[in-house]
Length: 195
Image (cartoon, rainbow, N blue to C red):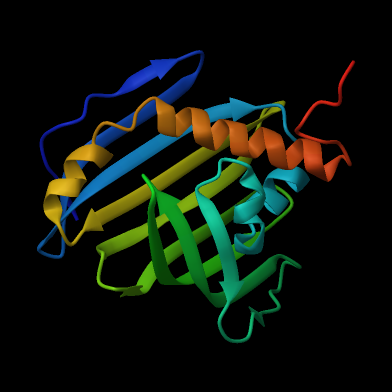
């Protein structure tokens, strides 16, 4: 993958977001990257990364993330949690429903957790590239989170929209991590009247 021109980094309050045009194996795509630090526990961030939990991020974009085949749990020598699976991802962007089959690899240790994803098939051929990762690691007293999304639409004019997602995309990722932590603690992300 080679980076192209476009997209300048934006940042604020310890958050970095970059979106730029790239070439992925001869296909036009957009590289969207964010990183930030959070006080959220690594356990809550692990739960946030598990693909089945993506629709719970509360951003409205993810409609469904369902396994299509077995979730292959693989033991490791270091007692790390490791799974390999395929999912049907259903999202809605700008009123348009996208369905994609993704391969997801998840691994978690005492010090870090990460999930990577790569498209097997775009139902309706809307996308030609969909890959990336989420990662969280203990760094000092904080957790450092990185998220990369590489997306390329078959109608490459739509890639222009993706280059304009910063800083909103960073805000969405941070909000999703926070929502997961609140839910993991048994709380509600929708405040009750009078609270």
